Image (cartoon, rainbow over all chains, first blue to last red; front, side, top):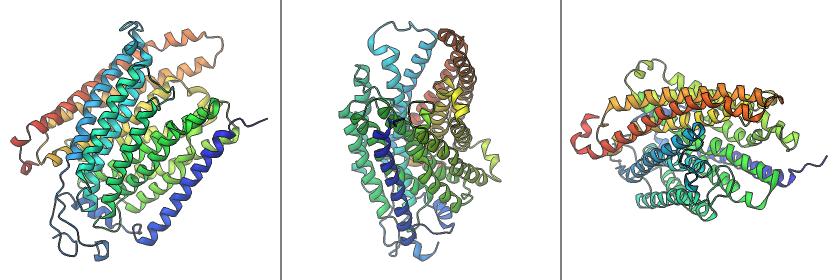
Amino acid sequence: MSDYTVLSTVPMYAFMGLMVAGALVALGLAIRSGAVRDDEAPKYRMLEDDEPQAATTDGRKA
Amino acid sequence: MSAEDVKGPSAMAAHEDKSAFGFVMAAGLFFVVSGIYALVIAAKLQYPTLLGSVSWLTYGRMRPVHTNGMLFGWLLAADMGLIYYLVPRLCGVKLWSEKLGLATLALWITIILGAVVTISLGFNQGLEYAELPLWLDILVVIAWIMFGINIFATVAVRKYQQMYVSLWYILASILWTAFVYLVGNFATMFTSGVNQANLNWFYVHNAVGLIFTPLGLALGYYFIPKASEAPLYSHRLSMIGFWSLAFVYVWTGAHHMLHGPISQWLQTVSILFSVMLMIPVWSLVWNFFATMKGQWHQLKDNVPIKFLMSGTIFYLLTCFQGPMHSLRSVNAIVSKTDWIVGHAHMAVLGAFSFFAVGGAYYAIPRMLKTKLHSQALANASFWMWLVGGLSFFVSLWIGGFLQGLQWNDPSIPFIDTVKFMQPFWAVRLIGGILMFGGILIFFWNIVATFTGRADRPSEAL
């Protein structure tokens, strides 16, 4: 039996595959750059980020 | 925090929050208007001749105004406002451009007003959630690019190298939204018949799964620890949830067309990935609940936490139903019935609106450096929303399931199944009235917080 959905599924799945490939590339780049690391530091830092604070010359909160 | 976490010099992070507040206020107003439309069309199910045959007041015109108003006028605008609030704080810098944020707000308001006018006049592309005329679709794309530039530029100059999980969800959803919206509103123009339906359901499902889900979860990951003042249980687990959602969600849209004229392999793939959705969902719910360990007493007085944790439970229920619906045997009963209407409303008005309202109750006093106008009113809005929502959702689940059983019995005339639903639609209307009361109180509370901000200094926070 003919598959009448080829017209939509082929480009749709190509785009979806592209998205997943993009996510894989993003994950690899993020790990290499240090944006993803296997530690828990961000969850403690985010609790302290509310109030505007002056930054020291090295960028850390005063 | 180690020294290498810090990227480099950064300006003083004095958050202006003009764009953030403007978006949330506009969203609140659209919430009220969309709620009025919702009540009218719910009443029309009880009284079909209500408002006569005036064209722009007919069910067919009012329903798409309601759905687009809720999705893009209220929820997406509220999410955008709260993202303008939390991204600079998580990055330790100011928003890249408040002017660009305000220009985006002006364009967004123009789009929503344009949508109300054009759909009311009968301009409609005839595709679910993609009803807007082409020129408004183009404006949406432009507005989203402006929003994306502002957020990406803010993240690019962030003070901390390692990003909190909310930032991952936000950055990804900006890209996913662009992709999903283009497919749903532009790619569909080049197809017809079952192929167009295939693309449309890919869009409809991923409008929820790759736009409102990641944005809502980003809010939950930010506001639950902030409002409870307890650190997230596990950042590692949150990242597993994020990446598994990134790889799994995109394949599920075709489960809306099970038993339809699409290929079996496509249906099977969508079922497989729909069931796999339990990985990101349960990891997130476990994370939120474990974060609240030892903090549950806060449910008594902490209104943002009430909304956020109730939203988490609604999210769990929604995402338990979703994979179950995708099983062929269950789908044969509930597909296209009012069960699905209850499910969709629980996702948008239960889970993700609860995250947005909880976040707004937490963030607005901090944006305005004042105290919330009334905790009692906020509490009242929560209970009206919760009781109204539950009666709304549950009545449609019960009615819809029975309706599905009736549809599977060819001896029952269709009109009898419509009459059968009337008591359930009456409960839905009453639940909707209660929810609308909660919306009105919420909007009044944030307006009064703004107008009376000078009387309540920030020290009172």
